[in-house]
Amino acid sequence: MTTLTTPPCAAVVSRLFAEADASDARLQERRAALPPGERTRLMASNADYQALYAGLREFYLAVSRETATLLYMLARSCRATSIVEFGTSFGISALHLAAALRDNGGGRLIGTEFEQAKVAQARANIAEAGLQDLVEIRAGDALETLARDLPGSIDLVLLDGAKSLYTRVLALIEPRLRRGALIVADNADQCAQYVARVRDRASGYVSVPLAEDVELSMRA
Image (cartoon, rainbow, N blue to C red; front, side, top):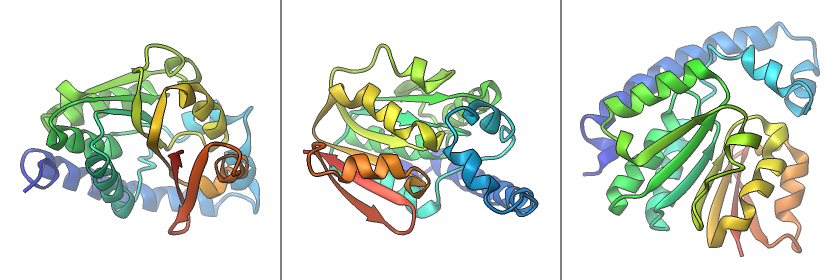
């Protein structure tokens, strides 16, 4: 048995995924009303990312169940004790990462989330799961919240916020990535610049796509 599959964490995760499913259905209706190409333009826009995500504050925008399980497995297998997450939302991915930290014997997860209401709810969800001692969620723009007070060595990173910021966020934390550190970028297909960066053989990463939209990279 693991922290992820036993109470109280398991019940919180199950509830949040059910809520995320309902949220995704509502979001699909909104996306269907957008003109062709408009969603792609918005997701790729550096200038509009704050307005875009403010307009999506009610939606979960969560990782899939498969990606969430992958996060837990990766954090366990690399024995992570120091994790950074860009884009916490309501805390589904944070719960999987924190559960892995618990099962690894402890550690610290630093998450960051732009929307204040999501920060409050994510903290409540993490506390309900009994994992609050392992998690710090910073409220605000990741370009500011991840520019200070990071661990000297980072084992694993999840990128799941504004896609247009992936390359800039990576640059912030890159000096602290240990050799062999793993970076999981969800919806990486929406940030061609990031994908090109980590797949460049001169970049210092080994990188491979998983499924349709996840990029898994390792600091060489």
